[in-house]
Length: 95
Image 1 (tube, rainbow, N blue to C red):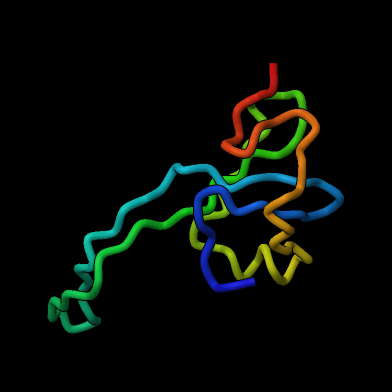
Image 2: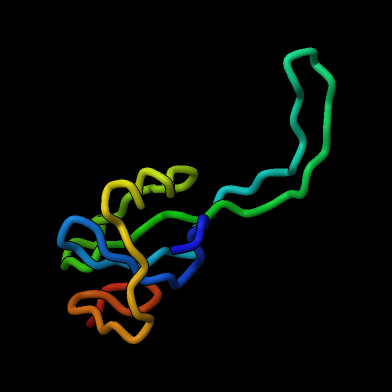
């Protein structure tokens, strides 16, 4: 598993399957050091909102910025061909 989530990534953790949604936080790349000196880094989008494969449309967890914890907890990326029971590949509920 790489160091970043991406939209559509299929994952498994604690006996549950899920998909990373297209929700993200955006960072403009600007930061300051302890002396108040401003720097500019590369802006990016931070993904990691996971919709779990259950029939509860609110079964979503936010793992943005803590992928290391996800991996340490046993979370893995699974095969993109995995078929969910309750959700579509975009995280919407199946009809």
